[in-house]
Amino acid sequence: MNILSLVAFFAFIVYLFLGIYTYRLDRRSSLNRIFALLCLNFALWAFAYTFFYSAPDKQTAWFWYHVSSPGWCFFPALTLHFFLILTGHKTIFEKRWAYTILYLPAAAFMYKTLFGTLLVSDFVYQGIGWCEIAPSGTL
Image 1: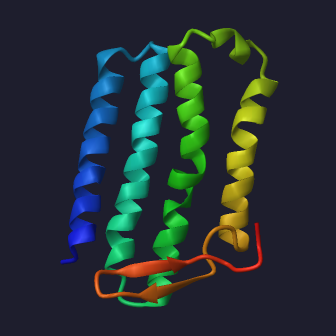
Image 2: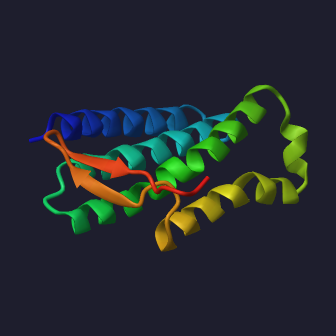
């Protein structure tokens, strides 16, 4: 087994435990719910990278990369949402369009990742696992 896969799997277990534990502490707290979502998001990302690092071929690596895309596309929006609630700026979310503004860029990035090229154009196998190749000529 690849050492990176082992570390990613351990991170998956920790994130999953933290998310479930926090949610069970107080299910009605919006802060606990968004933190649990954030932990589950990181758990999905770590779980997919558990298999990404030890993928036998490039096609399988692409599959697990696409599975991980919600994890790394939505974590900035979820983190901002968490900190807005933590700091007491809940009034922002009284308007429904605030959720759209917060999560629309993440959804656009995920769409671009699944159906185009956003951050990775190819993968190369190194001794320890797959390495991402950034596309050239783009922002």
